[in-house]
Image (tube, rainbow, N blue to C red; front, side, top):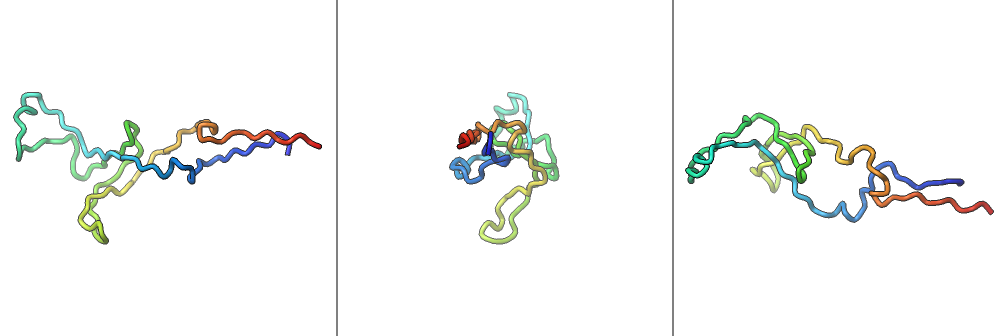
Amino acid sequence: MDNATQINDSPKTDAAFTHVPIEILVSVGRARPLVRDLLQLEEGSVLLLDKRVEDLVELYVGDRLIGMGVLEIAESGEQQGQLCVRLVDVNDLIPKGLASDSLGISEVPSSPAL
């Protein structure tokens, strides 16, 4: 095996970091009130958003958009009645051209021929 390399083209899904929980932010819309209106907010105030109920919501990890989805209410099981998101588009989570060594994968030199 001259000049052999052991490079896996797909990410290591069994790596230790895959067991670390992350937070996904679901953005349903933005409001842009004037400061004077913001200062007058109180219980019962209504804040108008720039989206409609049927619009897609955006899913973020940090400041990176990872996908789009539709808000739903779980209809069965333990989570019945809980708000959830059905994904309709998922962005590529591993950027193209990601160096294999950043995944902890490196070239293994071949043994000299005997």
